[in-house]
Length: 414
Image (cartoon, rainbow, N blue to C red; front, side, top):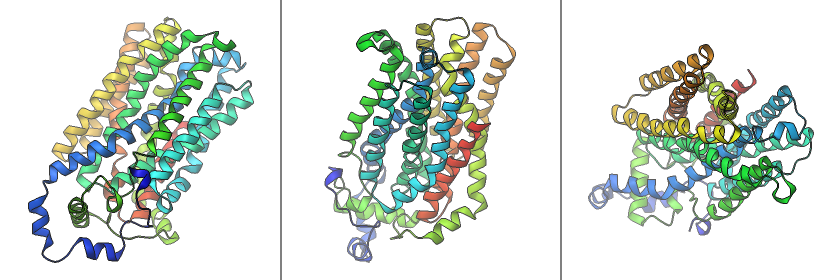
């Protein structure tokens, strides 16, 4: 189990490297290991837990949209602008702590850091269900952003330490697909939980936060045993498999380097123009992404549907987005193309937003939400894999990934 792994600092010491890769061993390694089978083993062991954590992260940040149509704003006496202020405060916390959180990951260990983040934001999310005032709503939303900030960039960096560059894009898209899955899952949960109105004297929206937050806390406790560190200490690998992974990564990138954290590498990330290009690229995608994820239930309800109907009608757009996120990622990996695929997917999203803006017939507007979700989620998934593929240096890559998401999330203040 991951919790019992060795926790020596760094990825691999020089002594470990000498013991693992000896002259003449490479041919033997190639003969004894089937690479595609080993990659599948990594996928099966690593990705389910990471995907589940990100699903819960997106669920706990976006369920405020489901709670709103169940009476959150009314009970807390908030106007529309005051509600938007609460949403903005989440992203202020998120942006401010994105880079520091990935610095901690480079110093600390993923099997401790990622589950601990999940545990803390689960507690914060649960507190949303018992807040009694607008001020309480503001405080909890801010700290939810702070505690969730490190998960996504942390996972992207973590995967870059396990997979070759041409393998990372699909894995990032795969776990990001949990964002759209969270939307569909959240609609079903919100529809069911809203029927608890009156239980314990609480309105239904409070139970959405309480139960989904408690679910996150339970999963976080379990995840300490299923999030592994890096290949040289992972107990689910044999010695031969560790050696082979080290060789394939050494030939491909810097993932096997014993790079210690230092501020000079942080400076390199902040002075590399590529890091800002990736960040501003995501900036253009983040606003339409979160406009949809935070307001889709309200948009659908405004078309004339009841709250219960709106909760359930959020499921098809997200389900289609989930399927296309996986599909576009597979196509992109096979063709080894990213920009043309992103442009094609973004074009679908543009059609959806045009329909939402120009035609207010309920059927056409609902079709617009489907096109918007089907286009924007795959585009974001593919774009976010870029720094993990193209930025060299472990610390620089960790900071670049966090910087991309941090600057990108400034789009929510537009």
